[in-house]
Image (cartoon, rainbow, N blue to C red; front, top):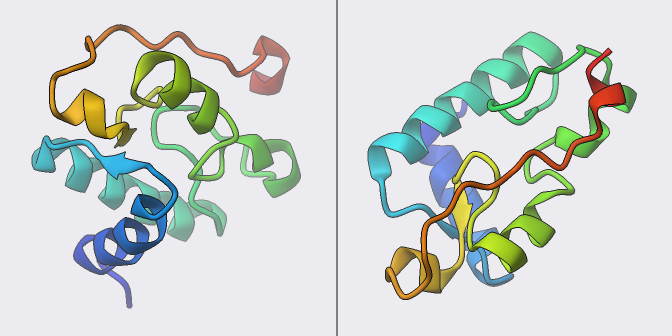
Amino acid sequence: MMDESDLHELLKNVQETKGYFFNRDKDLVFELLRSLLLNKDRYGYMSCPCRLASGDKETDKDIICPCVYRAPDVAEYGSCYCALYVSREWNENSRPHVYVPERRPPDKYR
């Protein structure tokens, strides 16, 4: 069974090659990774722990981590909505840490 340390290594290796880095706040990162694994157990897929999943994979496909909003969030703000993934500049404090607004359309929350 995979734990958050295993998931961290797996995702780190895959995502860093794409230019996405884990937040340097390791406590936050591991809390979010535990929540992703909990959602996988609960729903069968790793839905974003910062959003309300419906339990229907098709409905939630936009918030399966990494969600479809990550790329535009990191490009525009330096971090994704839940701040799991960030840019190198964000981690180095050469980019301001600002609030990332929710991009998911409200009708997805029904």
